[in-house]
Image (spheres, one colour):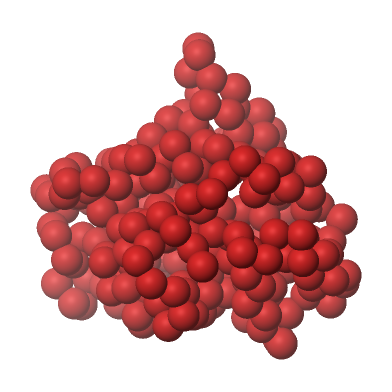
Length: 247
């Protein structure tokens, strides 16, 4: 049974990429965080690897298994809904990439920002003199172009909307993940749109905190296909049209 924090970890064909030592060390030392692995119809040995980990830490891990691949957005959404249907009394819930490009300890640190009126806190790959952000140059340049476009669409200054480390208060998460998402990969943008519709653009600075990461490591073998780069702009347009019509 989870205690304070729940972390959803979407997995699709991650058997060879899961940093099991890091997961085991964290689970052995942390009693306030429950890991929920959402296996998104993996066709490799991911489920078996997760089951081995869950057997070692049965009270701190849960596997939510989808028979067919649905995409990251639905894998996260269904797992969130599963948690609300099966667990009680958790303060925060969020998601993190399975390769732990952002570490679990840093995720837990970000959860501490959920308090008072802050309902959402997320990691940001801002390169500073006192942190370590290992990101390939071409991904950085593409990411900055996409982030700039997203900020203009949201009319809110978000440096890194697509970082895969986000935490929410349990109350707001239940509302944010109620409806299905339009895009399999740009659902982070939809989450920001939903927050804006609940609070307003001006209030976002009070209810959301963007936290510069201390460390982030660019892991090879991205789950997003290169061809999606061209479809992404259509997704952004469709998202903007959907949420602007609700204003």
